[in-house]
Image 1 (cartoon, rainbow, N blue to C red):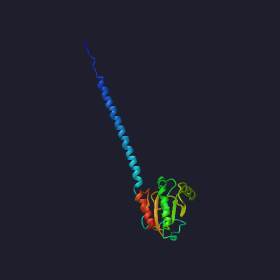
Image 2 (cartoon, rainbow, N blue to C red):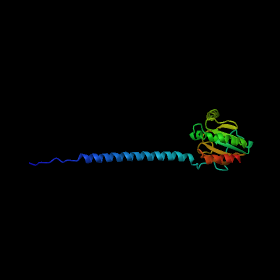
Image 3 (cartoon, helix red, strand yellow):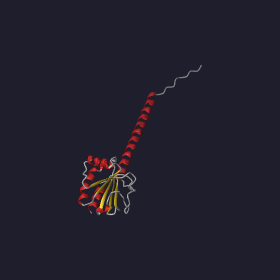
Image 4 (tube, one colour):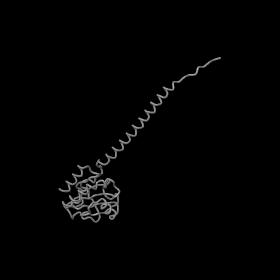
Length: 182
């Protein structure tokens, strides 16, 4: 008769390896979550500050029904939307920009895809002055812009002199105000 001795596995070693594997997998999952978070934050921050390549090009003629470009040497068009969070985040900038444009005798035209009444109510809800500002409703796709906010400085014929797209960094805001004051 054969006698087999039971094989003894050291449960201490198995338990130790199980703990090491559990710890390693937990660390790997944590690293993946941190990496996804970093990529998400970078993408969000990066998308705010990069200028679009689809700017209205210098020399492009802008046509807006009911706007007399010849009433002033230059006009600043603000293409916005009540549903654009970058537009809302730029409210402080618009509070500084409007007085600079008024002082330079540059009319402001706020172009929204929403109705004039909705745009005006939204503008006021952001504690922005309506002085010197004309609201125009233009359906999406009717202006040569890729997104909101877009600022377009045009001459007395409605020809684009300069354009800026997106939520501007402080240096971009200063550039707009400087160009308006020229």
